[in-house]
Image 1 (tube, rainbow, N blue to C red):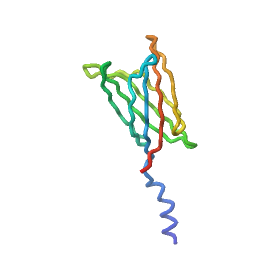
Image 2: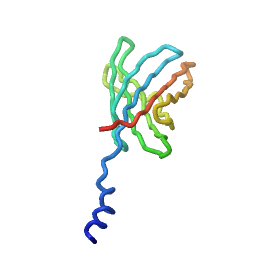
Image 3: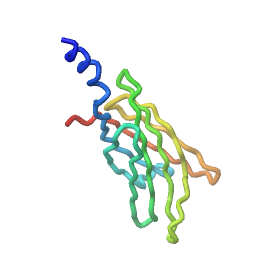
Image 4: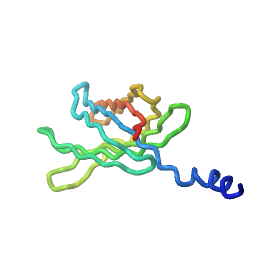
Length: 125
């Protein structure tokens, strides 16, 4: 009987971290420049690089469950120059309701307005 009780209390310590499917859109002055989707394990940094005719964009995302169907997403979004130098453009944080779009605008000194939209979903295995 004691073994069963101890095993039940110990089980949560071995629970797997939550995994999220994150769909993102990044726009510059209303023009979509990137729309990646990535799978993120809670508390770990997921990295994505996307190359197009405008250049190379990088994303880093960390997700944290906040309870009540809320997911905190910490982003680092930037560019990579031809010589490999990474320049962070923005490091926004978004608290998103699961399965609902969350959006924020970031104004830059050069009058560029970046819009970051995300939809976060828990991924079931």
